[in-house]
Length: 451
Image 1 (cartoon, rainbow, N blue to C red):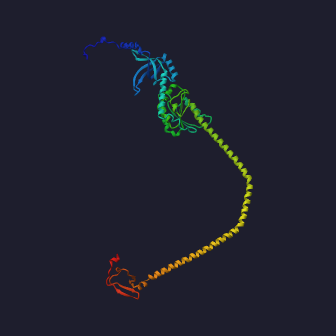
Image 2 (tube, helix red, strand yellow):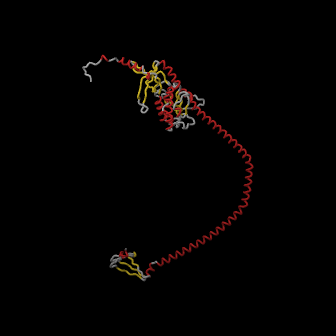
Image 3 (cartoon, helix red, strand yellow):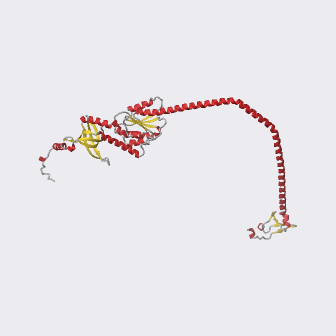
C-alpha cells in the first residue's frame, strides 16, 4: 500500500474521454463486433423522432433471470423499412417481449457509452418463435385434456342472455349491439357488458377479471361473447396466453371469440366454442340460431295445423258414416231386443215355477234339518241336566251325613278348620239322625294339614 504522503503518478494518468476513446477505437476495429447476427429478446421498446430505442436481453431458460442486457437502437432511416418488413411478415409491429434475430454492430460513444446499432432484422425468426409459443400453449392444453371442453358444451336453443367482454365505447361493441337490436326477426336479446381492456399490457388481466365476474353470476347467462374490432394486429399478441386460453377452454358456458380480422388467429380461436371473424359476425351467429329456432317453430306449427286438419277430416268422414248407419243399426238393435223380450216373457213363468219348486224343496229340507237339530240339542241338554241333578244329589249335605260325616256350625257358619274355634265356643254338630251341642274345651291344630 503506497504511503499517503508519497506523490501519485499524476503525470502518467489519462483523461476519461481519452480512455473511452481507446475503447471506441478498439471496438471499431474488432471485426467480430461488427455486422454480427444476435439472438435476443426485446425490452422497453420506444420510438422517439422515428428512432427505435430498446434493450436487448437474454434470460436463463430455467429460471427466467436476465443473464445479459445491452442498449440498442435502430436509426430512423433504417427503422421505417425494417418495421414495415417485420409487420408484413409477422403481422405485428416491433414491440417489447419479442424473440428477435437482429444484425448488430457494437458502438461505443465517449459520452453515452456502449450501444448496439441494429441494421437488419430477420422477421421469420420472430414469426417462428410466435408460432412456437402458440404451438406450445396448444400442446399443453391438449395434454391437460381441456382444449375441447368448451367446444363440447351444449348450446341453448336460442342463446338470448349474453355476457359481453369488450371495451366500452369500442366500434366493434357498437356494431355488435346494433346488429342484435335491429335484427329482422324481432328476436329479443338480453346483453350485459363486462368491460375490459382489449389492447396493451393490461389486456390479459383485464379479460381474466371480466370472465371471473361473469362466472360469479353464471346462471344468468347463456353464453359469453369476447369481441374486439379492427385495429393493429400487434395488439393480438396478448391473446396468445396460456392462462386466458385455459380459462376459456374450461368456462362452464359456451364462449364466442370475435377478435381481429379473418386472417388473424390466436390461441383463443382453438379453445372457444365458436370462432367468428368480426363482432358483427358474432351477432349474426346468435341471430341465426334464433332464426333457426323460429323456423323450426313455424315448421312444428304448420305440422300441428296439418295434423289437426287431417284428424278433423277423418273424424268428419267417420261422423258421416256413423250418421248414415245409425237408423239401420238402431232398428236392428230394437228388433233384436224385442225378440229377446218376447223370449223372456215366455220363459219367465216357467222359470219362476221351477225356481219356486226348487226353493220349496230346499225350504222343506231346511225345516227338517232344523227339527233334527233342535231334537238333538234338547236331548243333549236333558242329559246334561240329569247329570247335574245326580251330581247335586250326590253332593247334598244330607247324603254326606248319611255316609257317616258330621257338620259343625258356630254362629251359623260351617267350621272346616280347628283354627276357627276357641276354647269356650259353643258349637252345634249335625249327624244323619240328629244334632248335639258342645262347648269347646281346647283345640289342636294339625300343622301338616294346614301347610
